[in-house]
Amino acid sequence: MKKLIFPLIVLISPLLTAQEPPSIKSCLEISVGNNQNKEQNLHRKVHRGLLAGLDYSRFRTKTSHSFYAFGLRYSRLKTGYEDVSKTADIQLYGEYAYQYLVADGEKSQIFLGPAVRLQYKVSFYPNWDESHLYWANGLSLGFRGMFSHRLSEKRSLALDLAVPVFSVLSRPKAERLNKIDEVSVSGILSSLHTNPEAGTWNRNFFLHTGLSYLFHLNDHTSQALHFSVSYGRMKAKEGLPAQNLMYSLGYKFYFK
Amino acid sequence: MKKYIPLLLALPFFAGCLKDEPFKLEYNGFEPQAIQDDWQLSTPEAENMDRDLLEQAYKLVYSDTRYTRARSLLVFRNGKLVAEAYPNDPDDIDAIDNIQSATKSITSILTGIAIHEQLIDSTVEKLYDIYPEDFDTDLEKRSITIDDALTMRTGLKYDNGTHTLELYQNEGNSVQYILSLDRIYPSGTVMNYNDGAPHLISRVIEKKAGMSESEYAKTHLFDPLNIKDWKWEAAKDGTTFGAFSLFLKPRDFGKLGQLLLQQGQWQGEILVDPAYLARATSTLVSAHQGGQPYGYYFWILPAMGGYYASGHGGQFLLVVPDKDLVVVYTAWPYTSGEFFDRGFELMTLIGEACK
Image 1 (cartoon, rainbow over the protein chains, first blue to last red):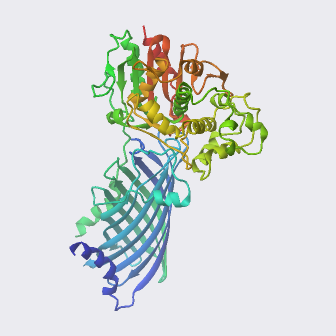
Image 2: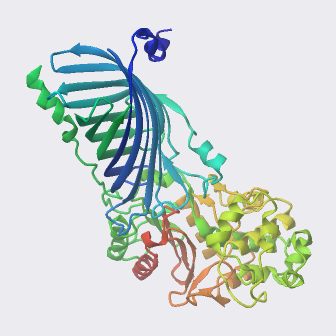
Image 3: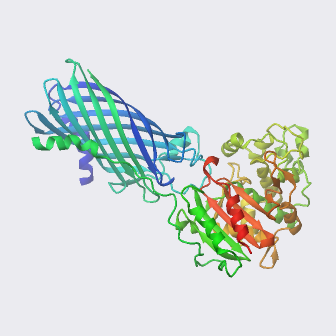
């Protein structure tokens, strides 16, 4: 029963504060940055390269704060051994978070609450393994917090932090006893969910933090510069870990 | 609270970078490990080999810039294991690895076993006489012989870059798929190295033996050599891939080299037809591109007096009869050609180490 309490809080928390009319905003973000992949099931070298990202999120704010978000990251990467970036890395995620106002100061506020995140991270390294895809996919439940600080009437800073706690994850086997992956759509989708296993930080450690500098344009729109860093390490019981570090700088546009 | 604000806001900037680690472990010599298997261990000195030249070869496979995807290098002389190392992971001693196109040479060995077992009377037998149901209406294709398929001279327009993936995905009769390809040369004329021809031979063995090539390999090759851990992939119709995807342990791969060195004899019993083997490992054709001499799925090295099986990743099984030498090199098998070294430097160093 205790195991169910946390997911239940996530599901019912939006209902707990349903009396007041909320403020609803959407946000579109485009970003560029640096992506670093270390897929040790492949080898011990780091693949690096530029990333481009597109995110959409929708916020619902009263005294508490909830949002859902979807995002896509695409990168072309290479190791120090390669002249041309042939490695492709795609990350796709969906997230829902509900954050309670836990501290309310004159200029600063802290929100904290549960978050659920589904992430697919799929890479293809044609120079190193021209036959198989590599992935680090997971469904995780954890916490997301935000610290916001008002600088002036129109400007503010926000620091957000996300840490998953429990995950169900899927990683490829270290030894592929098949020459070629199944390349049909159904075969790929099936592959990306193989060997699911549950774990906590020992299996899937993920830390996302971002700093936004917001400036309000009018009652309906605002914009922000957003610097974010994400680090993830996923390791199945068998096989070696995959690590990923991303820095990105984005432009956010908020609208009602 | 206020004093912590700058610290909190600086948090995202504290991340570092992921660090490269070497491809290989630290070089630790090449003394063979004492494990319970059929190999007798020895030393370079006892087998009259130059230790310094061997060390040069081993340091190459431990280099972080050469043979980057190396998994094993084993040297056998006079029927004994003289040197071995696993630069990527010590556990590779016990791991099966896809030997990729070196599989073709095992298909050749199995053809020699089928000849010895009198399942195949002659390599000039036509494939059409063995499995007519798999041929289309092109009458010219019916003249393709076992010999044509063993020397990559079927004349069919099989291109590995396109057709091997299709062969892998084909839901129907895999041999019919290969035989349905256009004929671009008369059979028996032009050597076109490809994955289709050995698959035709796999079906020959299947038809003649009444079992798949992998089952035949188990009973007639792997069991006699006490090779227990292996895997061999098959097409979706059950026909074993004759050209690729045999997975073996490095020491077991070496046993196949030793069998070749012993002209098909193992523990006093003839497994492979010796006359066939002699032909299979001699120059019969030249490669369409590059002109390298080729036998029945073996590359020939006239200057060295040897021959070798070769697979993607730069993997090889070298046999030099005059020097009583077998060398196994395995590597990650799916690497792009730009990122694996061809093994000639290793072959030369180890060959020269034999006094």
